[in-house]
Length: 270
Image (cartoon, rainbow, N blue to C red; front, side):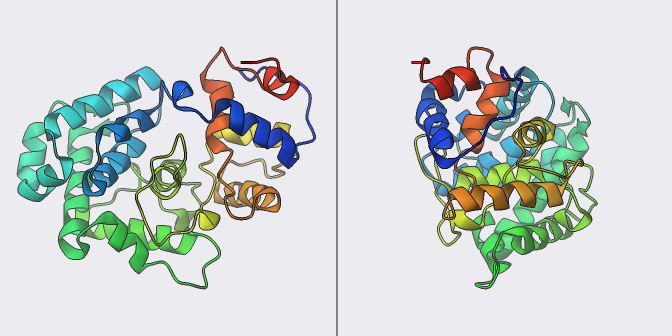
């Protein structure tokens, strides 16, 4: 639980204190982001990233277990695994897979969609960039086009697995994937070029929505895309070039019981 009861006036100084204290490798576990560090190849890392992000819902221990299982079955190079296998192979490999509401068939369809994008564009990055216009202030249009292409390549409706922002979803998991691939610091490994961090959208879930509401950064009651954009705009007034900069540090406060917003702000946490 978040260890603070009263709203705080959040200026850049407070956020930078949180960033400097908590935006460190030592605070990553437990987080599916940790799987990306195993892969130096960007081709592998983006496959790992989208798989890990897509399964990042539910209890964290189960998330780590499910992602680990999928990656183990993919072998040392997830990119080569995607290239060399068919839908039928995916279905055989994951026929017994289950992660909360995600079945082996859904995962197989998702992998087929990834394979189709790789065959058409060469990489997930190239597909995403094809939908990103210079005039776009955020990644929202490109993200909408990316989900549409993924559905088309999967040849099935993936809305229960990865909702489209075009229908109002905050798309927390896809925005989380973009944060991992676009930003590069002590936590986010990066690797994608051509997407400015200034265009990213905060990965908003119910936990981050609650923090934003408590701190007076979000007025909207629903944790949807409009709320995600509202929070992103607030962060842009503080750090225009990188509005998602503070996402990891803030979310640590609800994931790890040993961290406290009050202690971070007071400066008494080592």
